[in-house]
Image (cartoon, rainbow, N blue to C red; front, side, top):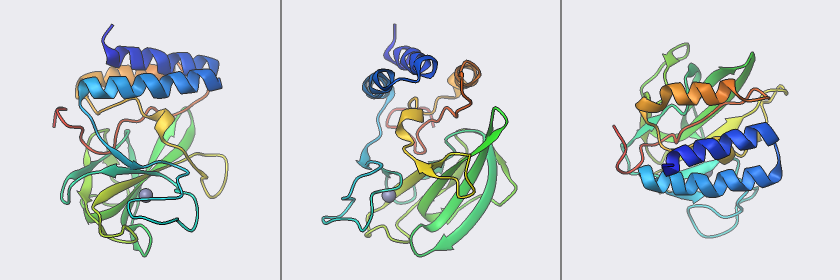
Length: 203
Ligand SMILES: [Zn+2]
């Protein structure tokens, strides 16, 4: 079985079991799957106290930092609707996309962009270019994409670790597979792909 299919199989198992063991298996197999298809590098994980520069963060990291070069595309991790395009001191130029999953709204955020290429209300497909990676906001001058996942169920859309929801690099040929995975989930949850292009992937 190709490693990518193994990753999907493992994710399905996890969706079915909703167990910690399944979660670890998904993490391990997903890494293998991504390596086979192309890679992307994560500079800082959810919950990390250190980031792209030395020293402690004032609070644990609220998302994942993906290595990318300035001007690289930031791409939608799933189909959705752009609900915010904004600028602030932390995120810099940011975009929030809302995803309807099994009747509930989840959100993904993309930060530190040099440029935004979408408007609020715009529908986007997984893999669509949202903007260009940069180093605006609190990003320590190191170009990277800060990516967050917000789950429904609270007014503030609590931020959770996106990594267990990521099945690998974006591949247009897998579109049906992504929806099948979501449909097979006992609890509604988004299936996400990396928000940057992976080395060697289709662009
Ligand atoms: Zn970050």
